[in-house]
Structure formats: structure tokens, C-alpha cells
Length: 197
Image (cartoon, rainbow, N blue to C red; front, side, top):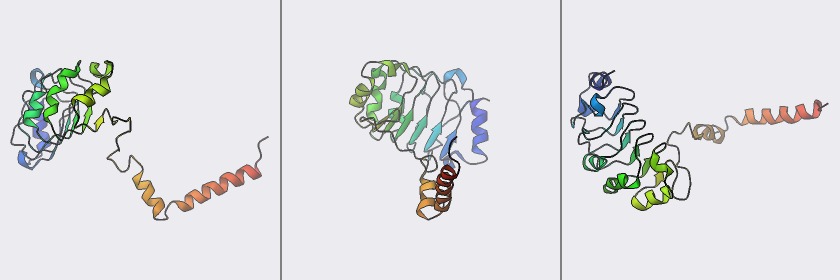
């Protein structure tokens, strides 16, 4: 599906200014550029354009409120200064699976003071010696690179179900404890009454 058509579908009769999240993954971009997206999407906070054959972000409009930008699995090799100019409040940027080969390509990201998380998985740049140290030195505002901080501590998952918070709450409220007790009871009971042969 073409990008313009997908944009129309995603809007679902809303005005661009009412949209806070926009997912355009797996659609077709014309000539490797962003098409149909305009600065009318002034309240956009999350934009995902995964695997749309992008070569460049030069057509990205000014999106002052954009915080999270997903651009993985494209063919972007540079031109990141556009992000500093048009998405000044970006906090998360995913460039995994693009054609980024050297550290200098990331230099424009220095101008994004709020950028805390950057993903470059499966980019050639990750193969460079001292890659992690070099990126953290170049971009001191970063907290996480490829999901880990400078001390190799993993970034916390923002999805409460994924990190088990929901389960913890059940046990704190007393729910689920009965199941646990029954499990241990049958486990130990089973081992005592059914000795291994």
C-alpha cells in the first residue's frame, strides 16, 4: 500500500492535528522518501515508519511534539541533521537495520538534548571497535544505546505486562498465593509419595 493511501486510512476521519500516534509500517514510500506527512500533524508524539524502504528523512515535516520515532529496517545512511531541525524534542530514536556505517553519521544527534534512547542494532556501525564507548562519548545525553546503558544495565521495559508488574500486583494483593501453595504442596507431596524408581 502506498504511503499517502495508508495515511488516509490511519487518519480515520480525524484531522491531522488530532493524531498523537501514527503507524505507517510496511507501506511503500515514493523514491525512498516520506510522502503525505505534513506539519499539520502538530500534536504527533509517536511516529513509526518501519520497513517502508526509506532512503532519507529529508521530507520529514516539523513535528515539535514528536518524542518517539521508529525508523528501523529502512535504507537510511545519513542526513540525520533533519531530525535535529524538525524533531527537537525527540527522546527515543530507533534506526536499527539501516545503512549507518560510521560514528560521524550520528554527529547531528548531538543537537537533540532530550534524546535518551538510541537503537542501532544491525547497522554496520555496531561492528566498529569501541562502538558503544564512542557513541556514548559523542552523545552524552544518551542513557540507553541498543537497550543498555553505559554500564550494560538493561533499559526497563515500559510495558507493565512484559516485565511482570501485573503478576507482582496479583501476589501483593493475595491473589495467586493459593495457586503457589497448591503447586508446592503437590510438588513435595508427589516427590514423597511417588519416589523415583
